[in-house]
Length: 88
Image (cartoon, rainbow, N blue to C red; front, side, top):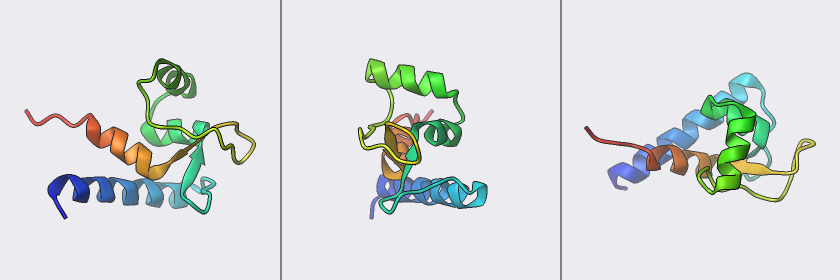
């Protein structure tokens, strides 16, 4: 496994642990609601919605869960986070 894959896997594991710690609802395939995805990313729900509509946010699914229309896989959140990595 390369460095990038290891970072993505570690990020996904950290997101999953945070979900468990905060008792966020996770689907069987590790998806969270848009509101919970925003919480995990540390941004406002409206900001995540705007980024999604502009095509700048993480991949989302039109398969709702937990009363929400949209959901996000933890892997896609981890990929999006790591895609923003900059080595100075």
